[in-house]
Image (cartoon, rainbow, N blue to C red; front, side, top):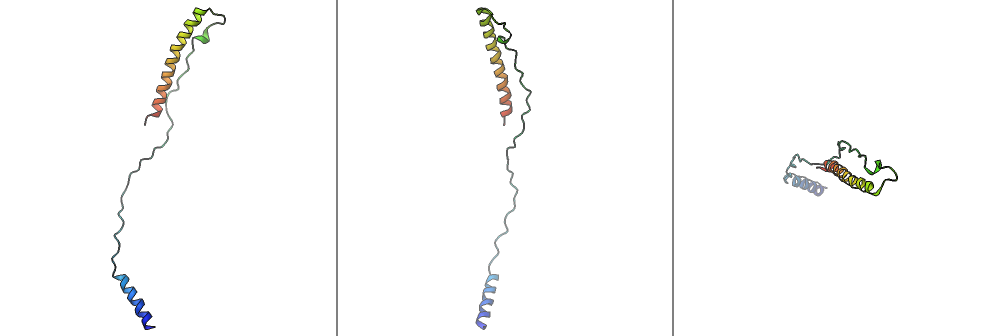
Length: 91
């Protein structure tokens, strides 16, 4: 019994002789997280295309003029849509 008490006392005193580990360093870290937000762009209105206003039974030269005009209208319309999309995709 005395040996057991001496052994417990030895282990207890041995535990007091060790050094404590240093306290953990507390620091603030800034983390940037992307947050989705709604895109606030004015809606692009669809133009009245030239071919839509062409009466049925129009002659070929009138149809060709309307198709050339519509092509330019579509190019401009697509450019506006792409600009609106690029505005929404900016970081």
